[in-house]
Image (tube, rainbow, N blue to C red; front, side):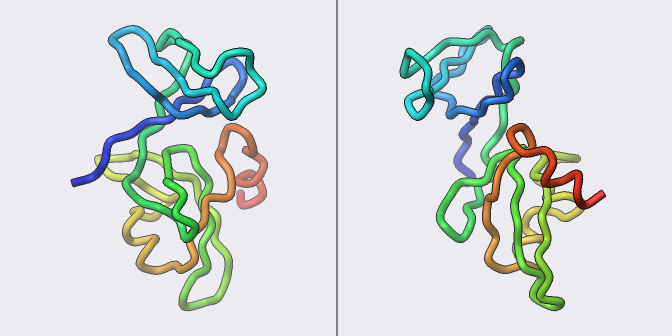
Length: 126
């Protein structure tokens, strides 16, 4: 069974932090690794966007979440492929690939950033 976890993007600043607690109308974020005054902070659900954990990890053991940008080397053509992680039609997708299909056809999958902090990484591919 897949572990259910979340991160959250603060809409105003595009910063992404781990979620500690989700309540009906608010979310508590772990901001320990930031330059903020507090280690935790509570945000209204209108001020954040929840990003779900895919249940997959990259080659370095880093958890892969919605909104992450992952890169992998195509096993057949030895070319680097970068894709955005999103949840569509009941499954996690890496660009146009089903996440598990992407893992099967690519090797050395690595989280290189996220679409909020580095959107230009995906703009280059269009």
